[in-house]
Image 1 (tube, rainbow over the protein chains, first blue to last red):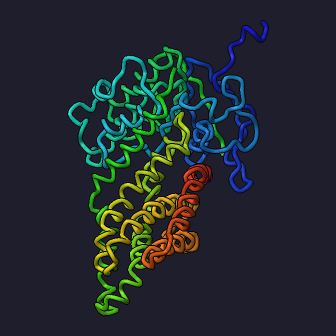
Image 2 (cartoon, chains in turn yellow, blue):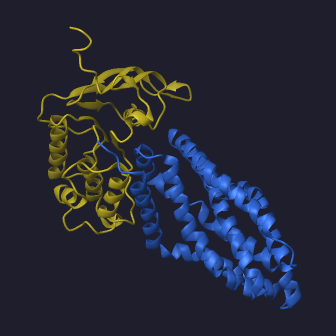
Image 3 (cartoon, rainbow over the protein chains, first blue to last red):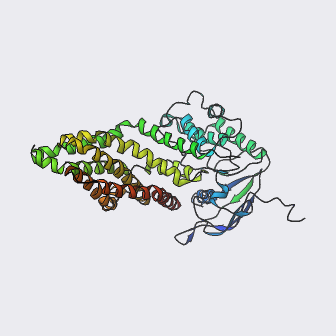
Length: 211
Length: 228
């Protein structure tokens, strides 16, 4: 097998760690993520799951080790717009409606072919709430409004921090459905979760974190 | 995969911030009311003597407008940091400095422009001669964006700290001294019938420099704030 036949992983970490005041936040990590793969990041509270996702999104600097994006060191301008990060803070303006929030996201990141703000809001289950200010939505509906970005924006790698939090059963099924569609169409996702993930498209890769 | 053009992204940012400001119209009115009240107090405190008020009118209006702008300054990035919008903005495939430039422009439109609109009224309350008012407006049109831009850099630098309001005022006031000197100098020169173009030109030069450099400094400072 030559190097030409091994596909270059979308994301590759080698002995990746992060230092906060010279203390490592988590033990060095090694993993690869190829297109079409889903990885579950597991670990106790405070084990650095969110920190890892923020590093992979390019919000935090790599402490030690290597982080490669399509075989090249991860840099902001090479992966800009290809990585979609959904953190604990949902990135929604409370005074704007879900529709207006999505329009801004589309204005910055662009839209997938064949999607529109309105169709995406219907798909995510926010029919009838398109023009309600986000501050008046329930926690689960806010989460759905943020998750609508996954359907709308043309990103390859999804970094989802606790995407199941606050969601009801149909919402959880919806996220699983989104992940399945995304991975079968050549995307990849990294998900942190405390809940059980019932993912149908094959066994997800597990990334175990230790403080 | 193609990203939206710069114009689309700029328009989206500008529209977002203007819509947000419109939804909170009360906040826009605050600096305007503040400036009105402060200017109204001067004739009461100093007496309604024309010559004295006329002499200080230009300076009082300038200082009042600059201080009123300070009121709204520290909210420029704080809500975006709290709700995670800034993270999304940093990750967007658009130049962050340009997007922040749009935010600063929106901030100037919503806080400084209403103040400039009422500036002739403030000047009239202090008996500033009508012929000088265009010079005052010109000075304000150049000095207020300069203050917005300098302020934005400092807001970005103090973004991580709590209670940044006082710190911000302490850091910003020395920086706006040159702007006040040149703007007030132009108004005073116009009042005495002297040429007033030179100080205005200096303000313009400083503004051009700030327009180019301040958004870049903002972007760098906010990236550091998110990195912490």
